[in-house]
Image 1 (cartoon, rainbow, N blue to C red):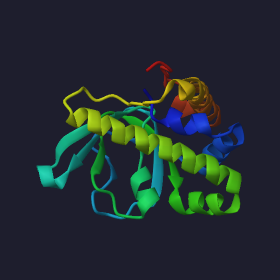
Image 2 (image 1 turned 180 degrees about the horizontal axis):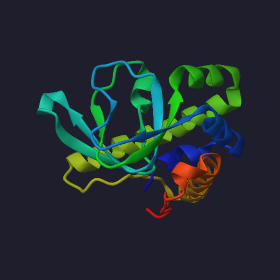
Image 3 (image 1 turned 60 degrees about the vertical axis):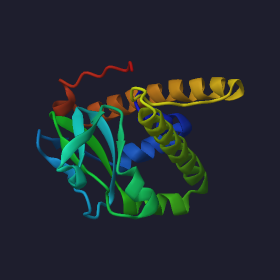
Image 4 (image 1 turned 90 degrees about the vertical axis):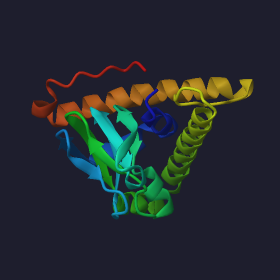
Amino acid sequence: MKRVVFILGVLEDEDVDWLIESGQRRELRPGDVLISEGEACDEFFLILDGGLEVSVAALSDQPIARLATGEVVGEMSFVDGQPPSATVTALDPSIVLSISCGQLRHKLQQDIWFASRFYRALAILLSSRLRSTVKHLQGQHWRPVAALNDAGLDEMDDMLSMGNIRFDWMLKRLRDVNSNPWEELEVDSGD
């Protein structure tokens, strides 16, 4: 499941417009470092296409995770203000939407409704990651988890459906704005 759908499913269309207008599209080649462990990073990233690898120095820079289209990167440092706890490197040719954390913080201070939706989306995303980590430590295969009671299931389904629609819409909008580099980009909206 694309983790960005947790965020885009909670946000409104105008919020997604703001992300597109404020973000910068970055192309990465295999081996390009997006985030360096322990070094300040003032950007929040949405992976639009490609694959990235997460590694930590304590494990001799061995990969501990692979990130793909639809993942969110840099959210932990954005939330807690600490330097990144891992290095994120492109495995494949990749495209990310980079949003300045300073610009994002300013928007959050100026627009309380956007802030409410954005922080709720981050809480859902981080909760899902924590649940996935716990399941992984219990020996189950890694996969995004959204454990809800029956009452919250319909709301989560609606949110995820809207998030997928907005992610596809975001890619189309970025493709239209930057038509030449995106002509060959094919998007699979499935999980």
